[in-house]
Amino acid sequence: MSEADPAGERERLVLVERQPEQRTALVRLNRPKQLNALNGQVMDALCDALEDLDADEAVRAIVVTGNERAFAAGADIAEMANASPIDMLRTNRIAQWDRVRRIAKPVIAAVNGWCLGGGCELAMALDIIVAGEGAKFGQPEINIGVTPGAGGSQRLPRAIGKSKAMVSILTGEPMTAAEAERAGLVARVTVDELVVEDALDLAAQIAMKSPVAVRLAKEEVNAAYEMPLTEALAHERRLFYLTFASEDQKEGMAAFLQKRQPDFKGR
Ligand code: CO8
Image 1 (cartoon, helix red, strand yellow):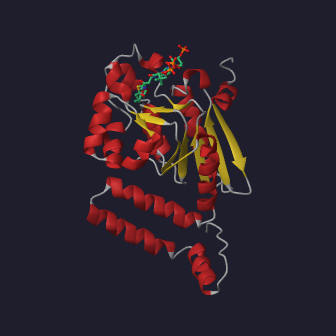
Image 2 (spheres, rainbow, N blue to C red; image 1 turned 90 degrees about the horizontal axis):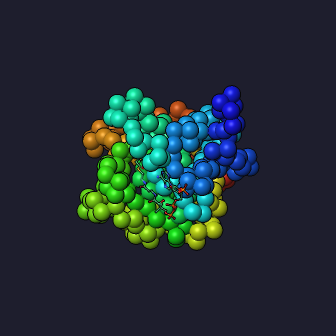
Image 3 (cartoon, rainbow, N blue to C red; image 1 turned 30 degrees about the vertical axis):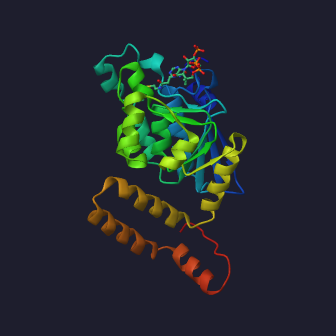
C-alpha cells in the first residue's frame, strides 16, 4: 500500500459493518497475523471508525471485536522496542486510548482469544465486556520490563479489586474468561462462536432505548469511576433532570401510561 492511500490501508486494519435495522455497528480489528497488536495505524483507524459511528445518527450502539485468536495481544512491541522516553512522549500514543474513552455512545467489547496489555486496556476503556469461554485477559507488561501505561493499573483494580489486580499486574499471568467474569471484569461469558452475536444482541437491546437517556446514563456510570461520591451524585441528579428536556422522556412516560411500546427518536 502506498502512502498516497492511507485511507485504503486503514480500511483494511479495521473493518466496519452496519446493521441498519438494529441501529448497531460492528467494528473488527483486522491485523490477524500479529494477533491484532495495536500499532499507531490500527489505533488511529479504530478511533476514526468509532468517532464516525459516534457522529452517525443511524447508529445507537457499537460492538468492537477482533478474531477467534485475539481481541488484541497488546500494543505493538516491535513498534516501541527501541523508543526513547522522548519518542514515547512526543508520539503520545496513549492519547488514542483516551479518544476511545470519549465515545459518547455505548461500546461493547466482544472478546475471543488474547486480550492483553493495551488490548485489555482498550476493552476496559469501552463500556461492557462480553467474552468467549476461551478468552484470556491480562496485563503482561511486567514480562517485558514495563508497567501498564494505558489505564491498566487504574481500571483493573477498579474492576476486580486491588488484590486480584496486583496478582495480575505483578505476575503478568492471564485470567480465564470464567475468572474474569467471577471477578467482575466481564459482564457475561458465552461459547466462543456466539460472542459477536451475543454482543450485537445486547447492542440491539440498548439501541431500542432512548439514545439521549443512554448517553447520559453512560456518563453517569463513568462518573462513578472519576468523581467523589457527593459530586457524582449531584452530577447524576443534574443529568436525570436534563432528561426531562427530551422528547424521549415525554414519549417514554406517555407510552408507559398508554400501555404501548415507546418510539424513541433521540431528541
Ligand atoms: N506486539 C507485536 N507483535 C505481537 C504482539 C505484540 N503485542 N503479540 C503478538 N505479536 C506477534 C508475534 O510477534 C508473532 O509474530 P511473528 O509471527 O511475525 O513472529 C505473531 O503475533 C503471533 O504471535 P506468537 O507466535 O507469539 O503467538 P503465540 O500463540 O505463541 O502466543 C501470546 C500468543 C501469548 C499472546 C504472545 O504473542 C505474547 O505474549 N504476545 C505479547 C503480549 C504482550 O506482552 N502484550 C503487552 C504489550 S505492551 C502493552 O500493551 C503496553 C500498552 C500501553 C500503551 C502503549 C502505547 C504505545
